[in-house]
Image (cartoon, rainbow, N blue to C red; front, side, top):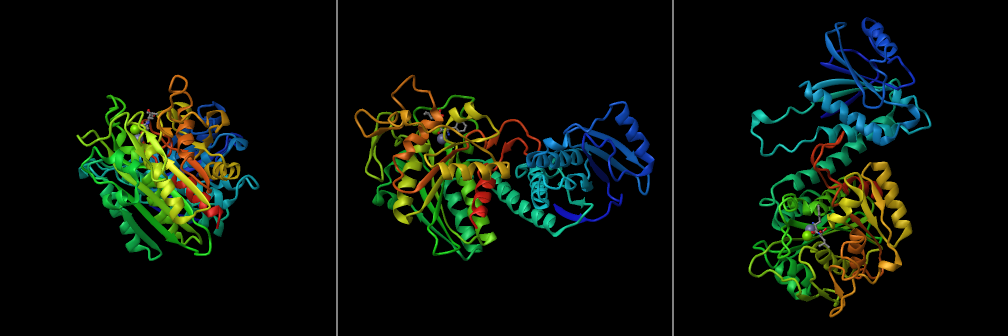
Length: 496
Ligand code: BES
Ligand code: MG
Ligand code: ZN
């Protein structure tokens, strides 16, 4: 999709979109022939410019074209998320009309001096357009594929460099998220641990400052990453620990990003039932996000040291699979009882975090994981769960989440919970033995992980709900969302 800023409104595309705030009552840029129709629509309240409302009409001059007037709502209620949602609604409306070129006139947005910068508006628009245009069509026959939008001409009353800068950044971030969405939406029979390794190695080929190292099964055995090995034991797919090293500034202490890479989670012998198991190809959404972030960090040439760490395997029920009740010695030497084979994410992350901290001595570790159903219950789709003992890191992540629209909401890491994952016959157990067993599930996942962090500032982001939507949003269709990509890219950009 091309996004072309142009300074004046000339009605020469198939569709013209004109935006209007509730307070204004007269859209700017309408040809005289339909100005009267619009004032009538306002007077009779057929159209009131409420947020998301769309009025459609046709103009005949200078060329016949469909015109959609889109409501922006109240000025003081405008947020960058509303800008993205507006862009998404525009894309959906234009696609349903089966058009490929569109003129979008949004001068109203830019008159709000002091509210948001032109750059912020530009990037939010690009994000909304590009994320909104994404559909997963790899397995659709040609006649079933929807035509993508070819060009959006964006009309501004003032055309500044900063809008262009924003559009460019928004595009990079949205394309990174779309790349993660492709990996998550695809079939688990294709996206195996070996495929994740290949994706990482491809990044290393195209970016000279990326190096990839992969620990295969024998190396994992030698190093003692037994939690990862244990989870993978029931599958034909060999496990991998994928290490992606991006060196943008050797003098800075590295930031480690860990992504859960369970390419399919059957639950293991604590097998998932129907209605829970079907979406479990998405259990590598953390890994997909980390992969895309690494490629994009290199593309942007960030002046940082970032290490992407992906423990990848399948959680299956083959004859070699681990059993509930097994006790396994983790990489850091702690013994863990497998209370439930379906709480596998924390096991592979634990070994990955401990290994990465020892190997790279990072100052910051952030993990992204589809870790708990409890997080889906707590927060639903529109925020990931953030659990961290580090207040500064939490605040920075919340801020990056808010500006990017890829939001996180903090769950409390209270002291009272800190012994809830202790074992009775081993150091730790992967499900709690306290209470009824389901309380504060998303927090307890993090309580377990904390036992594997030594010195680094650490945050855990549970994307179980935000990574995959069963219902479409305004700028994200049903399916994978790329959750984690936008927030962490903005977080890293802030650190530049
Ligand atoms: N991959 C699941 C979590 C999940 C649930 C992701 C729904 C996406 C949507 C994870 O491995 C899991 O099974 N967690 C268990 C943990 C429990 C046994 C402590 C869960 O949430 O039930
Ligand atoms: Mg599980
Ligand atoms: Zn899982």
